[in-house]
Length: 107
Image: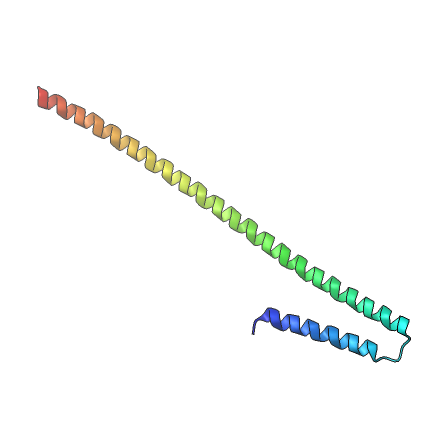
């Protein structure tokens, strides 16, 4: 079973237990409703905090991955530029050598 499901089940169980305890407590209805609202607000705040933590984590991972991808692109461009220069140099050398060979063959 995944950890997320266990945590969610635990939080749901705690919420249900807290609400059941408040509902069966011998307090006035208005006080009981206030306690339920307070507990609901507490759980909502906790949930918002967890969502914010997950959001921050995902944002950090996204930025890290984006940076890594940009570095890979830069390295790829550098290798492409190097290969392009090598091809130009080889073509130039070939052209010069074939021209020199052609001159020797004609003479």
